[in-house]
Image (cartoon, rainbow, N blue to C red; front, top):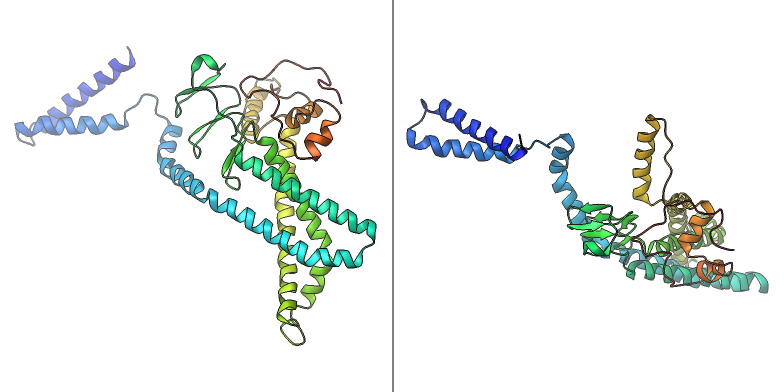
Length: 349
């Protein structure tokens, strides 16, 4: 029997049953409306495909909606916090640390601190701007324009491999990694490199400020009970508090963001995104029960995965595309992926 016939048959039985049980309890003119109301109520939750996961998704749907709305609204707040906190650290570094560097270190160390610090700052600003303003990539809406592997129920468009739907951006993203509230943007095929590079250089910058300002922090912390007394001036008190603020903030960020950066480095080495990591783990367990080994079809080998990620095609690109600001597009179009085994080194170095 077809599903629609089964549903109709069940609905008719419900109407007949409701009619029998209500004949002796209510006037005849109310039997049909009451039976119709019961029928509508039962039809709301009857579904031959319903299971515990569907019911749980329906129950949690308001929670998901609230999280999406809050995250979308707070995106601009998070971006403002990143800019404000980074600017405050840069101001303190130039106002407090740089004068001491110029007075204390030799010419060689002084030039190193100036060059390294400004290089880190340029890389942070460049990659954060590109990560927030570069669209992650969206699949075409026409079926004949994309080799799709599945269909998005929310966008009602075909999805190519490695694409996923973002509930916050309300669209599908090519090679989606995650939605980052600190960028107010999705991390996908076209801005994944900018996001990772921003994390790397911000971590290095915070470590640099934390290490460089360690002695100043110890001195300021030991004198925290004395700076409120004469002969310390208001400027001295602000200097000590600024140093403590900078050291605590940069040390905390370097640890937390450093752990996140290492996690993404592991994913890049394996040729995975954050979403694919969970999918691949489930698939590996499923095949492991059958005595089979799962192999990631999007991994080109550890070294090649890094070359593909950074767009390195020759040896000089490690300098011009990795260690210097570069706006080159990533490898591929995000729609098709070569799943066949590659040579040991597919790109020269």
